[in-house]
Amino acid sequence: MNTEAGPKKSVLVAVGVIENGTGDIFICRRGESQHQACKWEFPGGKVEAGETVPQALARELEEEIGIRVASCQPFMRIEHDYGDKQVTLDIRKVTAFEGEAHGREGQPSRWVPIPELHRYDFPAANAPIVHKLQLEAEG
Image (cartoon, rainbow, N blue to C red; front, top):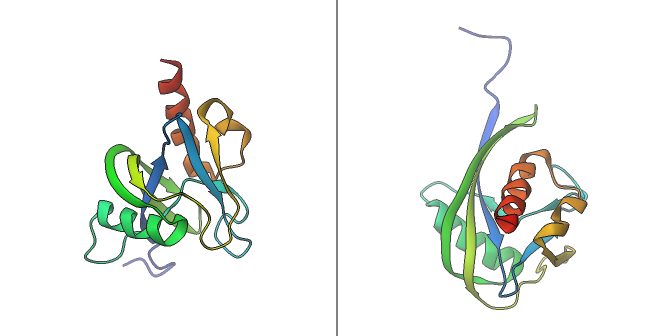
């Protein structure tokens, strides 16, 4: 039995890569009191007990940015260890939604063209998302 340390906290997160009609991607900036404070992110949040990833994503996007997801498809899955916690990001590409995306909780937010995403400071776990989006945009 390992008594040195308890198990590391592991969190499943539903993440939305939201694309508008012109191909721009919606991003938000994390608050000062949040993990990975003040970094830009693709919106989403923790999957609660009893929720599927699409259900969690729909709930989080309505709460955080005021949109209702009409269509989303699996995009990629990332596991990342921040040292203090392990996260599994289940990323869905949102291609149809209702409403106008905005930071409902007062967080800065904006639509960014895919070729410019690398200019924003994202958490390390988000780097593969930016990379894949940019590869797809070039291809």
